[in-house]
Length: 248
Image (cartoon, rainbow, N blue to C red; front, side, top):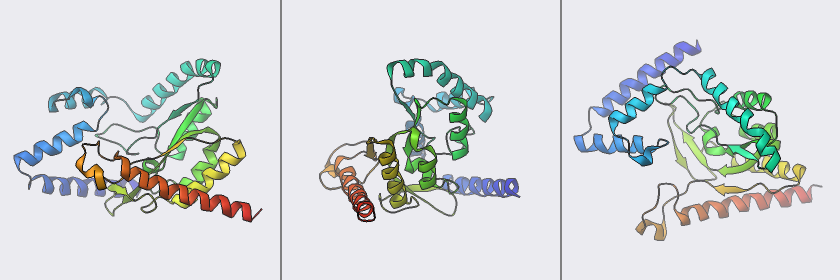
């Protein structure tokens, strides 16, 4: 049933994409192509469309298990050095947490993390908990994931996204969208209290607003928009901390 539903969605999505593509001008197609390529690792070097296709083809023979085993092998080799110099790694989840151009993903769900941490159990094999990336998938329960993997979270990206009926997503205000930001921050506060540490975080992505409208900024990384998000997130954290104190 699930595979059939996925196939129907894929067919529908492809048809919708083709319909949209057919309406584009040559200039709009070029802009779309550049936007897609610019978001890929290594694209700063300036991929052409042919080079991009070649890069995708190079991964065609790899399965999810292949990529997972490669990652685990890398971490197994690295972990003794991490422990020796006391550096805590923090892997960022897949963004987006689903297959991209046919390439499988290996850090997208709680199940993926369970495999990674069972195979490489050292606590120096840690996690960047990005609420935006994990939050794109409706099967990820973010507050529960914070509780489950709290001893491995070494960095936090607080960001919210919103899914639509087709499974696409877009950026949303930090306290809105599909991410239960209150639940996530409460879980993080409890983890920090249990571990006795302050976990570094950042308000990930933000509006381009006020003076930033006149500046050239990397999309999502304007200063004022993220400061707005930081103020909102700190307010939520303070409210949770005071509530916990009052209920002791």
